[in-house]
Image (cartoon, rainbow, N blue to C red; front, side):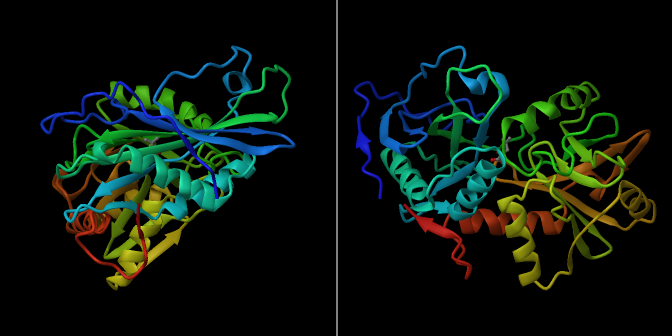
Length: 355
Ligand code: COI
């Protein structure tokens, strides 16, 4: 059990007004959680302090070798006033899996959950209540040793910041257009693709810029060896509905094991839909589309929730899905997942944790 020291801000910021569109990741709350780590001493000095800049040496290792882990989850305000977290233990487990891969010390699960609840509680008033909004929670760990040699650091900071958000994509729930990338790759097996770390996202930027120039909002990655098997999208996992079956790439070591991905699989199974986690190639998708069997495509993620895909572009082929509209399964998944998250729909999985 952490003994969290609390220093409240004396200059609280104005809460965003209800008609603020809450562009993703642009507004931050009054406080942040922070805790230090030192080899031999472990995690120490857990505290909640006013949201503020960090003071780090320019030689801090995170700036040079990118030793960092981050997570993303959300808090919701239910109609009855309760503050809810969606499957926080999944994020905590994944954070420690990322930590192990990145040689960052693990954070005891119960301390992590306590820290999440404590910081959300303090800034509870910042949880927006308009439809489609939530309080995005961004926990992260950075290596802080002042050192330029390459090795795991001896000192770290674990920080949690909060941001009231609306939809991740400007399109909202309108279908997005996706560019299938066959030049650059995001990750390879044995690399860090399944860890949640900045390196995977910087690796994605070049292709994302290229896709945007062509009018596409996200990139769909193919595997790094054959440039053939589907992996994931920039900020989401990807699902296809082909001839009645829900298909998603299997977790193969280079794909992020998404919490929303897992929830979608569970819900589809519960609804009696056939679900397959398999190796799926871009040729399979192209063929399914040519035969008129590609019924729906959608991305899943904490930030994006369910994001319908209306168009895929692979080389010179443009594949339109659902006539560019949202499919019934995508809509049902969105309604069900947001309903569970907001406490409107009960589910038997114990996915909701009250703060
Ligand atoms: C999330 O969905 O929480 C993510 O971390 C994706 C992101 C890079 C915005």
